[in-house]
Image (cartoon, rainbow, N blue to C red):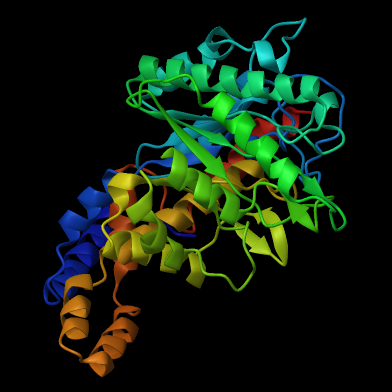
Length: 425
């Protein structure tokens, strides 16, 4: 497509700004707020959740990366290079979310319960050189000791102890990362533990999980360096009937233990609205972690797109003024499409939803509501959907020197021709 000249983008932005100013919305204020939001991109999108351990085991845990699109990253250096390419197409300064299985341990490998901060030195140096933050996750899957789908709830004491030690090691790694980068590293605990069919005992696994989590979190670590989060799931392949770490369990645990609660948009019933949960939960816990994906019929980790559900979450973040207590990450892995495109599509969709919410006349909507004018509220909500926020988005991309919509895929295709197509295994 023909590129739009910068002068035309700036002219369209000036016109759009006048539209918004008439409604009491300052576009520069909205853009400044968007500048301060850092998304955390999932490293596992770039290599189909394989990591670098070479354990030769199935992914497990109800996880599945479907597709075989060519060009998957085969090494940490290739993965970082691919992430650099994605970041060049996403306006703003963002973060990377790492799993423990992406450690760089050399030829002989290191057991997960013996991982050290030094095994992530290259990741930290790379992030620091670009001014990026890192987040972290212990990896409770794709391991011989997780082959039966049980980790922190495992009835075998030795197996359970291994995973507790892995959780402790991961917290220390996250704290070291946050200290070195000068930005808090969110360390998120998710486990696959559950039952394929109806369990006879729902209580004992959850009691073991509570004790295991308490052991993992026992060591006090500096909150300026590391933040603890716990993540629920509705069900998984192989745990359709019962998941020990359900939403109810982790909600209660987060309230009782003062932890962040992770809400993954693919981990709830398809008709359950995650946006409504923010104002219901945030008064009771230190903060939330969002993992944004797009479930299709089940938690299928599709690339986030500009859907009504995503827009509702963005609206709630803005209208509730929750940004200081909510951390936003992406969580998907689609091996059926170009992986750099997947990162970029998801991140740009989330940023667009946030910008559109920031440009909505929320103050006027709240005034109409407070005055009991619900007809006017609904009318303004609908009229606001046609506001020219796309012109502001184009200007945001121009300001950050990233390609416009309909143009950035040209760079992805060029990267595929010159880099990804050379990866033959």
